[in-house]
Length: 555
Image 1 (cartoon, helix red, strand yellow):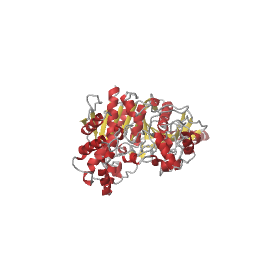
Image 2 (tube, rainbow, N blue to C red):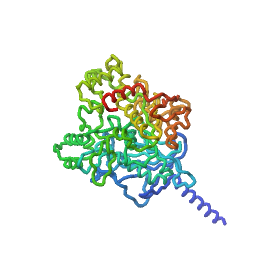
Image 3 (cartoon, one colour):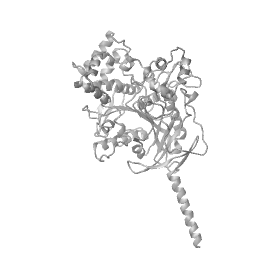
Image 4 (tube, one colour):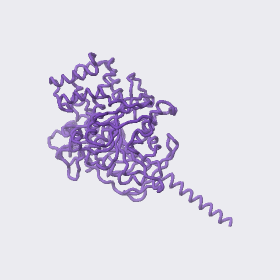
């Protein structure tokens, strides 16, 4: 009898250990095999969630698959550990590898729990000028979002020349990095229910180049049906840095910089395939001309129209972003988009380090004339537009340390705001799905640049300062009080983003009524610790640009 009780107790202990092991190391079986993840604790709330990292969503794009469209990932036998993030895609200054097409899943509920309903899914697309970054959450954690009951997916995609080389008449798949994003969304559609996510309630969201990527996915026929809502922060395919009108020319200029001087396209591609990723990445910005760099086109390899399609490939971008928008050829889903109120703040402030910067720009103000207007530098029309821009932003003053705030406004509009605004206005003309605009205007101590010591007196959040109000920022060593303006603003942003993902209504849970835009009435949420609805999105400044573009037939 005594021994029987001991055996029963040991059996109970063994079963409990197995249960605890299953909980702390959950297993999920996807199309390619079984994954082992981890149970973790939210640093924001203390709640439990489940983490699966380093999941391959495509074959490694190496060897003969370099510059090719992504292919279905291979299966594996046994259990694959999904407890560490996968390799980062090749980029300058970071340890990286070409085998990098991985994603991460963070779920608030134990996968496979039948009693739980499927949760909304948010797929994060990172920024970095299409040349830097990754889906890593080491610095920007998922905690706040997962705490709100959504399943978060973060992805890597190929960057720079590795992801965006385009050479007409060859087997190169143009926009490979954007096609990686489509492949990741196919993986989500097929597998996310195994993690507790709803494949029919997927919101894509991103910032900067990630925001531009989101707008590209809205434009692309390849992404149709793969997502239900979209959030673009501080980025649009219409931004001058996000689109290349001459990708083949840039490819040949890169070849010349690396030692290839022929004119045959296939020979160029063969030459580039023979180099290491490090060699390509180190020289890729030499593909830009001095004029392109001067006018803000600072990233050499970005989205481009696909004039020819390699065998087995599919067209991601059949026409220019502007043409697709004007023709109403896009995926009609609820769309939330906006900017920070001082996007160019840190770049503008950096110019004050040398007075010669201002002298150079004053002598050549035509550099601020948008290239898409198609005006030849030095022509009467180009000089006329330059003069109008200068008068609007600076009045009778020159660019200087004393007008740095006006310079910030001008460059914010040219590089970010105009593209975001125009994208939303064109969508409204053709789609009945709701469109919402916001302007993030809170310059708080939790802003990324302020956390890292920015002391510029220019008021307003700079590019990327909103990210640390959406993700758990590990660089913040001392928590802010719950009633601080920083945490109030954080709760606003997290609530807006997640409620939009859950229901399509971003204003659920906030204390203002935020109507969707219409062609007749544009509304903009001024996003701060205190919320308000403004009449239009930077209305006066955007009206100026509307008039400029209309004058030259580019409206």
